Length: 249
Ligand code: ADP
Ligand code: MG
Image (cartoon, rainbow, N blue to C red):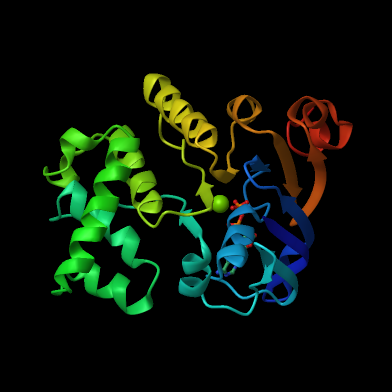
């Protein structure tokens, strides 16, 4: 589904991502781990087009996308939940989620965030997609409540619903469990497992190795912008390079 080949990006002469290659197969859950500053978020932004690569190729569903702007890649079926994503205050939970469907068009996102009037038919269709997404993440009963009142665990679910509202093929999650603990963390893990069971392809950044070991079919380890390991969780966790670079052992 996704092929990243030899992608690099530097900031002020320092590589944030260096010659990274990784593939994600249809239906797979792949995790990207690595220490802070390893280049994980930069890699996601290169995949979604929020940052331009200096070199390398990115193909999605058999089509080269590395020159396409983010909204064109979104329209092909990529959805991202950014690290530390926010909810829009002064909007209901459903309105927050509906913004996701408009992320597919540049103007749409802005007009949705500003709540400009739209075509009635579109509005209905997007409302239905939002309700499906809210149902999927277990937030249906919160739909008409103000989004800023949601507890942190449900805010994370809302962000997932917003990404799902665009009906993606590939879902990119940048540290979805950060700031969550105990039961909230468990609920999020279960939700990701359910999305995977639905057949969604997931690329996930996570700090907690135990958390991804349970969720991911494959783990890619980044260190200093480069891939130092790529394989099934059990194999990657036993890799001496990974232990040295990431686990500090
Ligand atoms: P991670 O998500 O793995 O913590 P990042 O991708 O955020 O890492 O950052 C990788 C490196 O690139 C870091 O050294 C960071 O300071 C640098 N970096 C990321 N984005 C920018 C930017 N917009 N401008 C300058 N440096 C950046
Ligand atoms: Mg990051």
